[in-house]
Image (cartoon, rainbow, N blue to C red; front, side):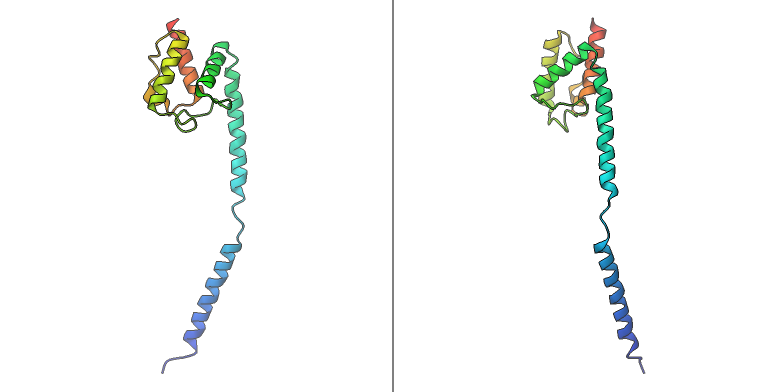
Length: 137
């Protein structure tokens, strides 16, 4: 003879346990650490931007940044912006910008590979171009 009262009791306990787990899952607080991490990341980005701005005390680098700002038509251009990801540059835009920089500076930019420029930040391009200018003077 089968115990008839035991099976429904086990099923009910399983269902109750599932419901308790489900309610706990729904009512669990969302991860508050994400906001703290985002705030920390933003603070670190600002610190990095400030340090990079210090490098613009060099007048040649500052002029190059202003030139890039004008060419990209971005008044909010930051040194930490990536040409591809943040500014939406494609390979044609990069070649065009390199040609304009060469005309502006009066030198040939041999160190700046346009296929790599899309993965570089504004600060990296400025440093690379500045080194090229120093080399060719």
